[in-house]
Image 1: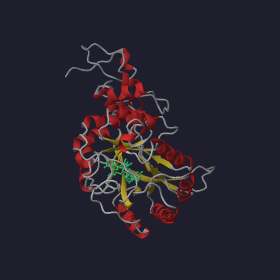
Image 2: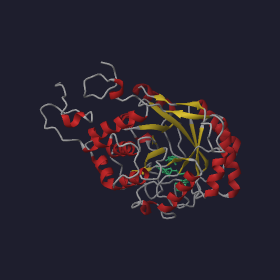
Image 3: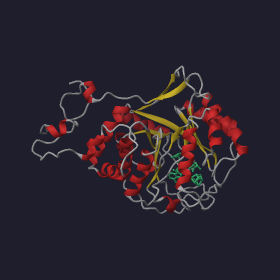
Image 4: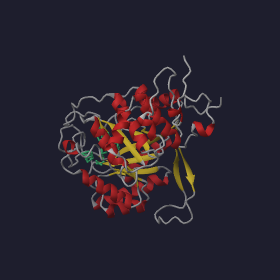
Length: 395
Ligand code: SAM
Ligand code: DTB
Ligand code: SF4
């Protein structure tokens, strides 16, 4: 195969061009590799990234990814539904809404001890984050004591804690922060324009308000959405634009692929082109370079190759374990087999000393933090010297 030469225009960006081809002045997406953390993305920029030629998009996303993370480490998070079904909200995708006939049996809030027993099993299977979800519009005051005990118990096991309980007031958020909750998951789900096509019992602005309450309480934000709900590419871009232009990027960004649930309004949504899903992941990676992007719901319907492409595009977290909240997820054995084939490792928690002047009164003296590493860039490591493949290996 002919050696790939570089033109002055693309040398600066580390891109390669075949000698015989007319060199593009600059690939539009490559200009965003060095963008860093921005909160002023324009719709045009976001759409340009999403629409870029697939190989250019993946090259840019992987370049951004290795600048901030070890590209071969993936976080394992574990989910548990602590209160299932009977939810008063009408989210069109959800098995747990009381508005739909999904056949799911509603249950009460789980006992704290049962939750902790499940969490222990997850930790022993390698999970570093434990996410507890409740099918509520918002938590009731009477439930808060149990929820707080769950956070404290899981945290004491040395895992990061995450909860998703619906809308939170500033007081709810402060209580959870005091309990030591690490993350709160609250998804915007789709673009502002498409939101009312999917959910009518609350507004997009309600979601943003809870996110602000969570952030103000000092809890880290886990916020993403669902693709494959019949939305247009512009909606996927609109969702990412909203997330990336929040005052602070969510620390975790779950990208869910719709699991079509029989009996819900979206049961017959047209299947999404897998390439469009990978584009969404890659665009999230470029626009939110320091966020952990989670390849979330819908993996049972994805091939190994599609998941591998998502990891290449910058996804570095998954839900492990054979159940999500109510729907199936791949068996952990098959995930570990895929990790082995890809040379991917599960990320570990490391103990970190906080800064002396930490003023978060609710934070413990020492705490576990996830180590997702970062890889040296070719320019920093010398690379193989070919000037075109982007590798970091010595020649
Ligand atoms: N009730 C809380 C709420 O809505 O924030 C927490 C639980 S809710 C099930 C958490 C998220 O799961 C939703 O925001 C949605 O993004 C995702 N989700 C729910 N059902 C899904 C489905 N069928 N396919 C893909 N993602 C789904
Ligand atoms: C998120 O974004 N995805 C998870 C988690 N946050 C709570 C939930 C996925 C739910 C999939 C459908 C189900 O299991 O019912
Ligand atoms: Fe309720 Fe959450 Fe399901 Fe919506 S997504 S119906 S709020 S459990």
